[in-house]
Length: 255
Image (cartoon, rainbow, N blue to C red; front, side, top):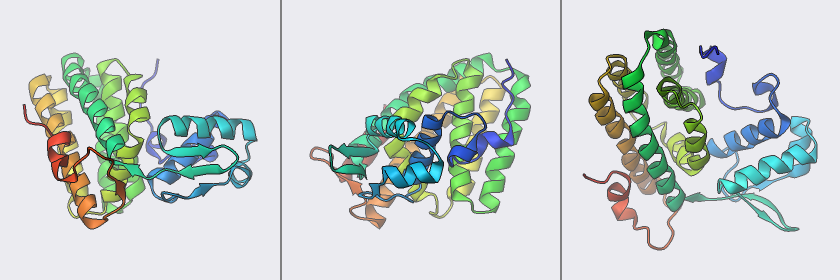
């Protein structure tokens, strides 16, 4: 099997034209999810089945499959005979996504370091180049796409590429927060530096260091959520029992 990466693997998910041979239901799902993550479809927006089908050139069956998958991820809600609407950003969903992501990725990165093969050097170099290029062009969508691709590729290096799908399915709300906070000062430099440090630790086979660096990298999520709560009050729905003053404790617990 050829696991080499291509530049096209890191393009933002942008619909039917985003990948040759892509199943129509998956293409519709990617198109709508990308619009939700990037806030092109804002919380409360109505998703018109008829208009979206026409825009994507798909029938209602794959469209409904896509909507069902998005509903299972908590990104949309379907009101019988009332329409489909984009959900607000749920603090509970953000925290759940972070817990699943960090639990899996901290194990994955240690394993990736243990089994690392130099054949992956070229692929990681491409990722670093694309991350720097996105920063240079201030391309927020591309930056998030490459960021996710870096973490996805670590799963591949560790020998468990399907783990990324579990992470992806759980982190829709978290990705909305991450994308919204990208324009904050210093984001591009921080991510590039942290990814490079993680890569070097994995490449050198230092699982303990890779684990510690990944934990610090993922714990930055607490600062991102706190930033958005302060800068855009009301953007994140704070369900009962989720105290916004304890976000740091919930997302980056001490151990």
